[in-house]
Length: 337
Image 1 (tube, rainbow, N blue to C red):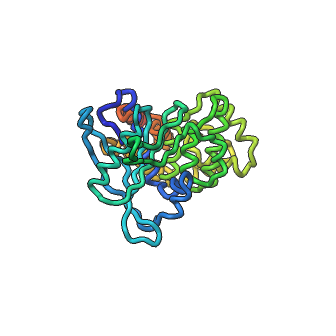
Image 2 (image 1 turned 120 degrees about the vertical axis):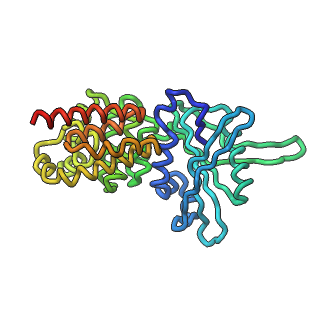
Image 3 (image 1 turned 135 degrees about the vertical axis):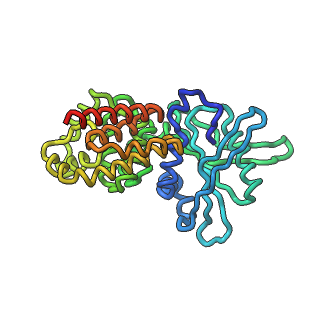
């Protein structure tokens, strides 16, 4: 559960819980298929609905905690409803398994249904998190509570690059890889995007999520360009067409430029829509304050720059400042014409 009061300002700068919630709610079926194939086979995904957020108070610590992702559905061949609780955990927390049980209990108290709890550990430290809580005496076992878990840093990214699964593509950025493998991870992510062929909004969500956690420096970008040139020419062209960061940094090959100019007007509106989706995913309802200003941008280069900025921004205020600066430049350019 997200801890709205227990995190420092630096931890809240990126709304990790909201990013994971947006990603998993968009690709929930793919998430279950990737990590929990047995559960995937049993769940009826034609009858899933997302419940509203639940807010609980931790009486001992005086903190408000929110359940971000609750899915109501049922199993194949059954009529009774079940609830799936997915809990992204972006920082190391003592006795996290205790908290999972407490919130499981609260949810069961309210809904009185079978609940499948799942935790996703995404912090950078590599460790095995306990996934059960047992209460017993030498003479009697009172209870054993257990939840499913995904420990991303304990996952080898190479095991997932052949998966045509959008969740796998985005989460490569949080899996286990060495600093020397960063460029290769980004290259394989781009190759996965090409195979997935998602619409522009979903493509931007995947790219924005990935680059929030793995953004290459200039030297690494140069290395990436060299690696892409070794690919099949058709694959290289498709990667260059689809990759947000590639477009925004103006590194298209000359063979693409004519085609891009011909589709410029149509792409602008699609990019604005992608910006709105990504802003909502990263910063929630507060992002609506900048929607009107986003629509005021008319130059393709300014829209491209904003799309990249939103992808890597650490705060909404950073985005607001960038938009205002860009609008000022746009107004000055218009005055000089």
